[in-house]
Image (cartoon, one colour):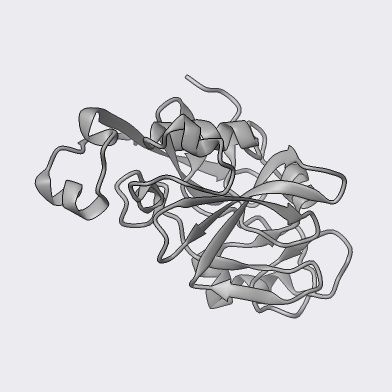
Length: 226
């Protein structure tokens, strides 16, 4: 059942916590729902923020599992070195953080009705959070008012970012409980695609280019905007 929550960022406590300037002048409409992936019956929470509907959890579909040193396919679970899907699903890292995907797998494994967000779709979310358009054009760390905190578990948008780290293109897992890296559909060149980076202790949203062979977390966005 849908739950619609209208959050008004006017409370003094919220203002002091997140140091907002743009969002304190508007109300933010947040709508929660659920999506069930028919391929494995895995249930994912979703959240509509503005006109966009996003996964509110990291994607976790495991049609196969690759060892970290594998150059093929591109589906991993943090710190798991085997190839058993059932064993991978029983790890704490999978239950907390979902799976990690290289860029190609992240695109190909999207459920029907969902897709990997483009760089522009991430920008739309950033603008809705109150980040100034000129700041977004800087293409480094965006925001001045701790907008990234709004996307974290305690951040009131329901986006619920968890810090699952990432895997390098040479098979090393890094930065669990420190960073969350998310693929964009948009390519930079043949070897790299754009990404978003959220840090545990950083209130800004990072923009960067990741090697397509790396393993990042994935948040899909719905094909239809309302």
